[in-house]
Length: 228
Image (cartoon, rainbow, N blue to C red; front, top):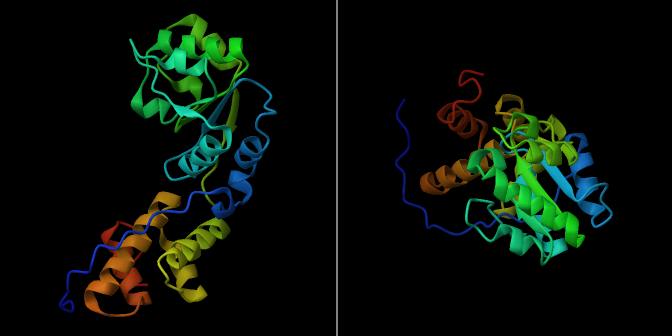
């Protein structure tokens, strides 16, 4: 198939909106949103948000960071993470992916408990799946409040796509949104990539975003069925 000639579009920035008012809430996110909204009245000093890639953990973490005035930490050997935790709320993102030192994280948890602060951790996996060898840390993690974020449902994916297109001053027909939702990977991260690639290709080819273009993008990203 011969594609139209493409021009190089200007690299305009499209920063994702990560404020509380920009958060789209549906059932898979409701429990996690509630725990963030209810801060500082948490059931425990440590809260862990666990969910798949692209489920909204980073957006929620960003909202909580701003709301709580939290500092980012990475509890590694020799880090000052526990000292930072003694001064106020702290955020540790992607614990399972970035890794951590057992003793350092143990001291961070002790620090927030001792000083009446809070620690928010995000992870793709539940803490019971983390490679923790220190018994005292495993005990501390068992006492944490774990909130699961499920995969986004069709309603949320559709809302997210509409929002991402609107962020780029693009307004797409509902039928096209439904077509994309039915064929895309079930993640908010995939929605971001699809919108970005559709916008880029439409600009490069000087064309509208159509079902044909959407099918091409879904195929390139390994989603959907090009012959639908």
